[in-house]
Image (tube, rainbow, N blue to C red; front, top):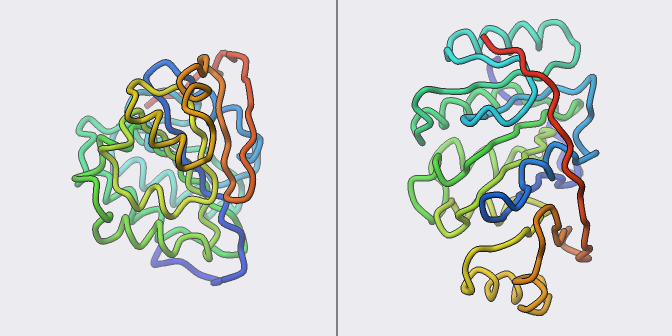
Length: 221
């Protein structure tokens, strides 16, 4: 894994951000998103809370070896990293790994939970995280990230995704902010029930109500 290959500038930006308070159903929305194939895809996960079904590794070196093995196989895989220290520094290693495995001829899905935990501030993302988000699209990156504290994450996570899911918000200020961003009345955003989202793809805004689905079992090591 030395770096991205097969640049394809005309690839559509399908990276997605999920925003909502705790319990609003962000992870459910991510897991139920049909844009992420159930089989045959190359998927890596930063999953500090063990929310997603995957082959889970808690040691970084084991995680890297498993991803490398998956890439060599040419087959799909779903491998997650659950770090003991879910810090920005540790996440930057994950971002570098994601960047190194990109291939414009084959999508790579990077799923990231708790974006606020891996953000140092609310400004522009630093170094490899900025590079991954700014340039990953043309090498097949399909980023999917969740946050319940949007005011605490890198603004790069907002600006470099093509699709945003807006779920139930905790504060009036957040409801007002998103009301202006997607031109939906404040009272409608404030009244959103759990598992209900406004989905903005940059052209249209649609509303979707989900039903809770139990996750599959997790293979943990």
